[in-house]
Image 1 (cartoon, helix red, strand yellow):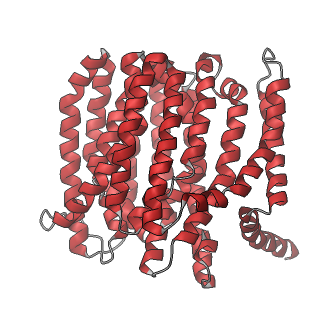
Image 2 (cartoon, helix red, strand yellow):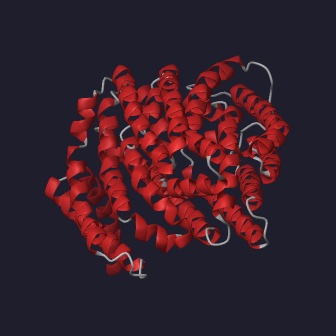
Amino acid sequence: MSSMTGPASGTSNASTKRSIGISFATQYLELVIHFLAVLVLARILSPEDTGTYSVAAFLMALLHVFRDFGVVQYIIQERDLTTDKIRSAMGVAILLALAVAAVLYGGSGMVAHFYGNPAIEQILVIMAVSFAISPFGSLLVGIFRREMRLQTLFYIKIISALCHVAVAIALAMRGFGAVSLAWANFAGILSFGIAANLMRPPGIPWCPQFRNIKTILSFGGIASIGNAANIAGTNMPDLVIGKVMDMAAVGYFSRANGLVQLFGKLITGALLPLVLPYFAQIRREGKNPAGPYLAAIEYLTALAWPFFAVMALLAYPIVRTLYGSQWDASVPLVELLCAEGAIISLSIFAGQVMVANGQVRIATVSQLIVQPFRVGAVLLASIYGLQAVAVALIASEVLSLAVVSWYVHKTITVRFTDLMRACGKSALVTLCSACVPLLVRFMWDSADQRHWLPLAIGIAGAASGWLVGMLLTRHALGAHLIAMIRPLRSRSAGGTET
């Protein structure tokens, strides 16, 4: 992101690059840990187990918004963060976490009865306990992100991920089924809180206060409504499929969605924690965010669009190689959801940019417009099957892009046509990347059991095509990557000489 800021000091550029590097290292190592666990768990847990946990996880994700209530965002964007404000934020976080835990615990029996699945009640009870202890680590995340202490977050997240995965696999192997994932989530949250407090910065107060919290509640109320709408719309398919179809169908959909979301975990998951502080800093410096925003989308689509195009073309060998034949029903869903992912990449940073520019209300309104349509489309489509649900999600993202683009234009004067021009070279790079995977898809015999072979050929060809596309189009991301690699080569050469 350093090139987005225009003229800047060498120190600032180096700091930004280091922050991006640490963030990506955190995201990738965390992803590898969880991904290896998924490969193991996919062969231990059934689609019904995965579906059962997915339904319960929807409620956890929705209530998580009200537990956090925008406290982390408040800490990051607050211009004058005093000790009293931190203590008040801590008080808000604790009160809301306990309230949400009580709601989750109290409603666990009703939800289990609604779905006719007793395991859901046990999962929700465990999740309620997880909520109750979560503020002791989550509040420090906001402080670490505000101060860009990403190395500290690296250690905390990796410790948490290892604990999560170890508990999940151990309990799944002992026959705990879907409940093993709930205990794994509890272990991850507990270890996160312990590690965060062991690395707690000096001067951060320990005791909360429950006065002067009106400002935080006001900010959090607006932010949480929008976040809740977004999460409800995003996770609604699992909830609807679980009721209209069955838990196995939820499992197939969840597995496909999880595979498509790998890009978010690979790339955007590492960038998103930096986006709000980055654009908030631009705002504080009085600079125009339009250029940096378009550059961010240009860089992102040069990675996202080729990724989704290649995954859609190679969906069958990917699913067979990673998860096995029991997940074949996820293949057509992967192909459709890749189109949704490509559209999302055009607006993924929009909400963060609005909040960073003090437009949290506009960010919320945009979600309140889009998400009801998404929920309605999923409800209607669920009658016709899983692929219809995926098509409904694509239509929802088209509407979302139109609405969000309108509000981005009002916030930072970036028009949709500006966005499309910024992505022109990314489209050509995508075409180059897709050539070999397209040939593999139509020429490889699907009866061949060596599913890893077409996958390897397709990925190698896609990588070569991506490099050719970057060179032919002279994409801005290519120059940016070269600028980041040159210092590493210089250091390597220097080390060899000595």
